[in-house]
Amino acid sequence: MFKTFIFLRKTRFRKKLHLNKKAFSLIFDWVSLFYTLVLVGYIAFAIMKDGDFSSWRFQYDSFMGGIVIDRIWSVMTIIPLAMLFRSFQYPGIMFTSAERMVTILPNKLSHIWLLTATMRWIKSTAIYLLLGSILFLFSPSSISIVILYMFVLFLMNIVMTPIEWKFFQLHIIKKIALFVLVIGINILSIIFNSAIFGIIFVIILFAISLLSYKKRFNNIDWQRVTSACNYKLWNMKFISRVSKTSFKKDRQYSIWQRLSFWKKPFPYENLTMYHRLWFIYFEKNIKIILQFFGSMLLLLFVFVFINDLIFFIGVAFVIHAYTSVIASFYSDRFTTDIVQIIPWNVQKYKKTLYRWVTFTGVTFLLPFILYVILNFQYIVLGQLLLMLVAFPILFNVKIDKIIQKWQTTFTVHSMSFLIGYGLLICLIISTKNTMFLNVGIALVVLHIFSKFFNVKKV
Image 1 (cartoon, rainbow, N blue to C red):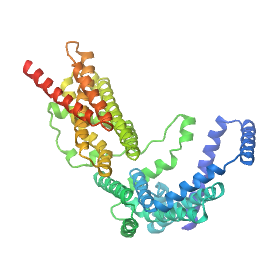
Image 2 (cartoon, rainbow, N blue to C red; image 1 turned 90 degrees about the horizontal axis):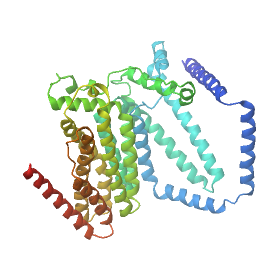
Image 3 (cartoon, rainbow, N blue to C red; image 1 turned 90 degrees about the vertical axis):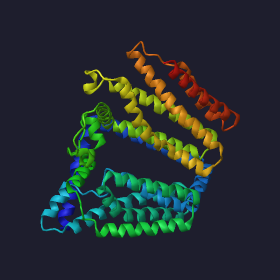
Image 4 (tube, rainbow, N blue to C red; image 1 turned 60 degrees about the horizontal axis):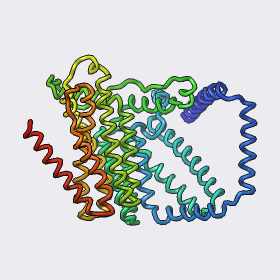
């Protein structure tokens, strides 16, 4: 069995190496590449020989030492979070259709699984040793700091292997719930940074890992596992760029088609159809949406730890960017699929879109909740009011401007546009002068009265 497994790995490695050589030879000239490498090596040697890195080495050493000594328990909670995030699309070990085929032969499934997991641990250990050697050679970090880093990474890698394997099999709702729970644990670990908190977390992680290892073959969707691993193994970015082709996953039922409520008879009502059309559009653009949400959330979480002014500048920017992106989606929706041909009610499209954006936009409140926990003052209640009012105002104004392009008789209230961005300005300046918070609340009252006046006028 071991010889068969090694033969499988060798053959796979040779095939990938052969493909990369062919792609490399199509782009680069070997003679020019050799002289380029010689020139780069000479420049690097000259810089290392004559350069002065003493100040940089001192600062780098202080930085690395501070992270390990003071934040070691926070690091041990961040590593599982990163591994769980990867497990949404990958089960953690390279169990492809070839490994699955080997199990059909007189070989035990548990032995193949363990060998595959061992290959992951060996590969990751080699990477940790390489990174640790570079850190030790090119920085004045002590050997104890380097070994501590390597040991933590190696330990978390082994512990998380069965957890990632079982996490990949879970229902998407359970995955999201557990991922949010781990995010909450990370936030608490950053706030308290307690050794007791970290030790309890590691003990619980060990217990979950042992339980997952014992039940690692229960309720496994092998087709889904092999499909994900095949995609990760053969989706070589360099080959795809050179050949201008892409490796696609095996077609499977989507997550939604496996949910029970999705199998119910479809009610052919106006609002239901509009919601379904929005769902289809968002599903096709899910990659862009996730990239936007991820970048904006990362921006806000970083700004939380800088200062109040920078954080609320980030909040105002996110509200502006989110409403602008949604408006572009609204405009683009009428140029794709069946919507481009058949006339639809643009106001109902706007109404159903607002439900989607408010439901998903709640995730942007997570950095604000962290900000409130770290810097609670009663002024944040007023700032929250300005945020919650500015968003729907800007959403309606930007969507109405798009509708006005199609229906020239449709009117857009410029006062609402000014009030929306005025609230964002007041939100930013209120961090330095609380008087502007009162100005923002006055603008909110003015907006309510103008809406009431327009309704009475109609």
